[in-house]
Image 1 (cartoon, each protein chain N blue to C red):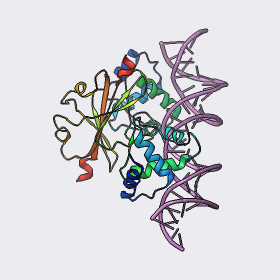
Image 2 (cartoon, rainbow over the protein chains, first blue to last red):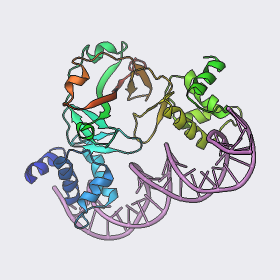
Image 3 (cartoon, rainbow over the protein chains, first blue to last red):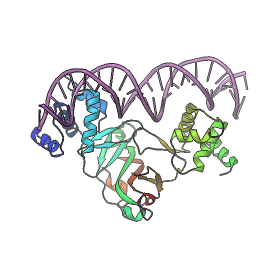
Image 4 (tube, chains in turn yellow, brown, cyan, purple):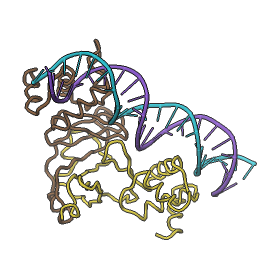
Length: 137
Length: 137
DNA sequence: CTTTGTGCAAACGATTTGCAGGATG
DNA sequence: CATCCTGCAAATCGTTTGCACAAAG
């Protein structure tokens, strides 16, 4: 995605643009491996120091708040982040810990029919645990 | 469940029986609210001290290892535990934070057809977020 | 010029670990 | 009596917070 487009998406959500915020979001858009805060920070500061841990945390929190990114939790005690905001679920490899996006929108019967009466659904997410093709071959 | 039956289930998994381990597992079997470590500990030590935090952690870890309980993660940074080991998913109320079990076994198309070729499924779990009937009425 | 973000270090809370007794099989 | 569980406190690790300074609009 072009730099202008990234900036526009952030502005449209009312976010103030800073070099730190821009680089966090751009980094997340460029990768699909659901990185942790630590991994994002290491990536940004690879050549020279761009941002600090506290700022990455606050930026991710701001991006999540306005819906530009999602938080993914598959392991205990650690948050991962995902710039793919389209409806999707996750496949988690128990050997290499890689997380892959899974498009999975068709349920039958519909979720609403499976729930006890009177519950209101806001969202749902599924995690499939298994072994990925790379680890099997 | 009778005390003997609980003891037998643990023995069958090769676990050494101690008062602490017994009470943690019995407590978890008797409730269906997916308690945290803190809640289990408070419940056990209600009248007089039965166990310590470190022991509850190690017991839960042992029980999970042999498959007698499951760990449930819906909030960031906190683990909950569940003695219901049958296939089921979770409904999480965003107002009162209650977690309810949902029996939900029918998917169409089958999960295996939705996954990219070559992946091997071990398990899957879904979390539905919404508002429960009690909070709506 | 006002608002808001940044970065450091200290604080925090859940979980883990080391180790000296003590209980279990 | 050998194994390994228990409990305490200290350590660890991800995340949050307070605050002085700097940057954005």
